[in-house]
Length: 131
Image (cartoon, rainbow, N blue to C red; front, side, top):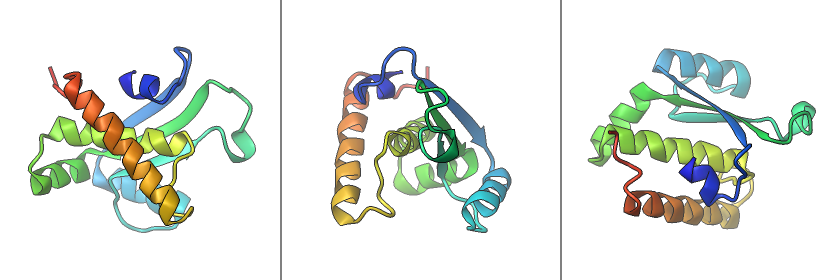
């Protein structure tokens, strides 16, 4: 909820979050995005394309690979839960229109700045404690 609030979403904003393993996210990545490999997070917006406007409160789906998140946490020297929250934040930013892949360097920097800003605020508020 803190991530959505930081992005100015209202209390009635809806979001689906799935935590899966590498095998499942690889299949999703292959079947929907044409990339036959596991990845850390995938977002599917319900505010774009054929689904846009059906439910203005439903942002979409965020799918996170726990397996990849665990590897990345270990490699980055961070707690697993912290990495999960970061990937959730990253996925939600995509659902809110931020992009780092197709919109050029300026948009990528804007997304990274917003990501770091919110992540720091979550850390400061103690929202990254798994308990």
